Image 1 (spheres, rainbow, N blue to C red):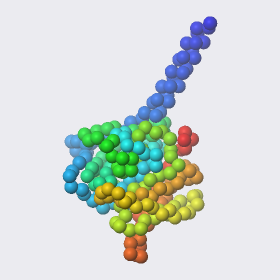
Image 2 (tube, rainbow, N blue to C red):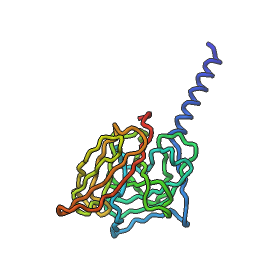
Image 3 (cartoon, one colour):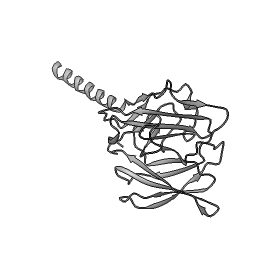
Image 4 (cartoon, rainbow, N blue to C red):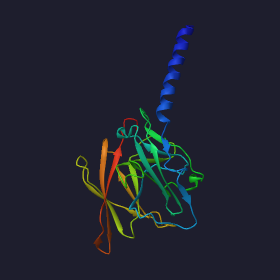
Length: 239
């Protein structure tokens, strides 16, 4: 038996495994603007006032782990992450620094919460991660959020919307994607203070780059102001 060949094979396998592990376990850094992680869990629900409460991968599941799919434009820069529960009782808003030089499919957000977020069902906790510092911008291009440990880009996204008791539609406006209007579904059970509607948007044929959407709401046959949304789409080579 050629022991040198065996040792070489084992060393190569370990190196590959190490690269894969490091590529899949990249972690963002919390940037504290005050003296603590900003979050609250109250007995009285509060309304955020935002139309889009979150953009989640449709394969989300109950989990404490929160991540964002990677985007090349984020390297070494800030990402604002807002989290709100469907019942409006939990809320957090914090800025994270995107890791430099990461080749991970997704970047994990470190868990600084003192609460058990895994008690929320898959679609009962929204995550909105967008480019920029929370204290400097109100909104920006959005990264796809993930609950759970999946590294695979899903075939669709769930956009969680506060409809204001209106009929809601998602309209694809990207120039390189076939235009289409998607009817959104109303959540009918439980408390719906944080958001009350889910728009499921297919992204299988969206390629890479960005997907531009417009959230349209109609109430009493009258159109409300539209909400523009740009979602960053990572490379789907590893899907």
